[in-house]
Length: 203
Image (tube, rainbow, N blue to C red; front, side):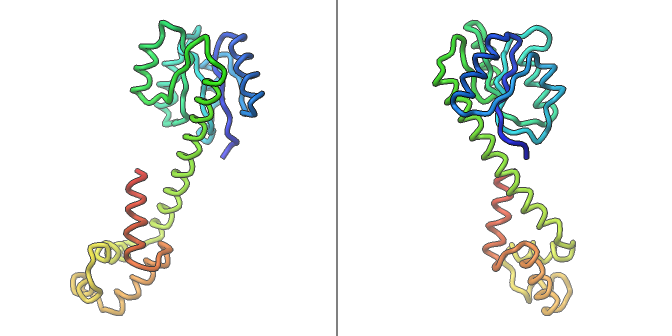
């Protein structure tokens, strides 16, 4: 994962410089981009932090850039920089999943607070994504037969009932059960159920 960074995308050099100076003086790592196109050419799926995106720019607009990002499956939090007349557009963008917006002329403390909140939200999203990936990786180790046994364990069925339903011996059920617990890194059916519920909640 790349280091967290606030990406400032604005075609107004004065705004870019002002925001960069503000964030750097508050110890927030940042980088500037003169256009949506330049940012989109460079952005990588593993970038984390947030994007400060001017809603109106020459060439591709901030809203178009936002749509392209989301179309690529990129969920980097986006904070729109807006002029007074752009607020309805910004509110519409919030409904589409933008993180927040700031109005020009902006209050320095408000900008820093919003950027920090956006970066914290992205960090939490990255952690959840990593946790989900770890559970999915364990689940991928479970064989189809073990999966059948696991599903019946999760239904609360006893080994004897599972053996009868799958037409296998009790000893085989116990072996599969043991393997499932080992691969999923749990010690009981309750832990297993909790782990898979956690995975479902993260979807």
